[in-house]
Amino acid sequence: QVQLVESGGGLVQTGGSLRLSCAASGGTFSWYSMGWFRQAPGKERELVASISSSAVSTYYRDSVKGRFTISRDNAKNTVYLQMNSLKPEDTAVYYCARSAYGYIRFKVEEYDDWGQGTQVTVSS
Image (cartoon, rainbow, N blue to C red; front, side):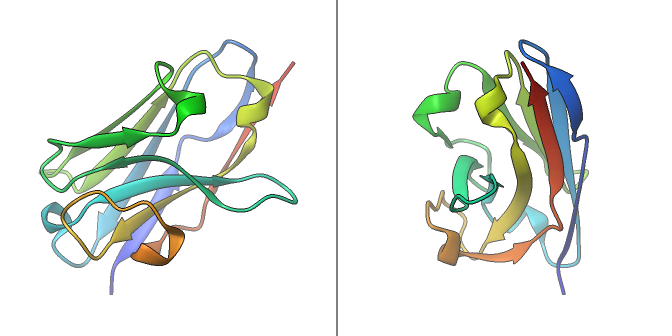
């Protein structure tokens, strides 16, 4: 049973930065791609960034390109999301998720395991 625990969320002003962490336990972390999703009230859950098992490939949704960076440390079973130049529209609950594949996946249904989420609020 894989467990994912996010941390690092909080309240920040526009233009500020936060670093989210997701620690994994159970399973073989280095085999699988990981993703960060977010869900704002009344909206669907959306993929923010994804990273392949070996970290060779990454994906970012257009609205976060140049501001967010996804990375992973397979020795620590941890994936990170560095968020800079935050905007009010980034406000959401952020979830990390593990796919069943080594390469990047894009759809919610392609991820098998999810964390409990961490709230990110950006004030204007």
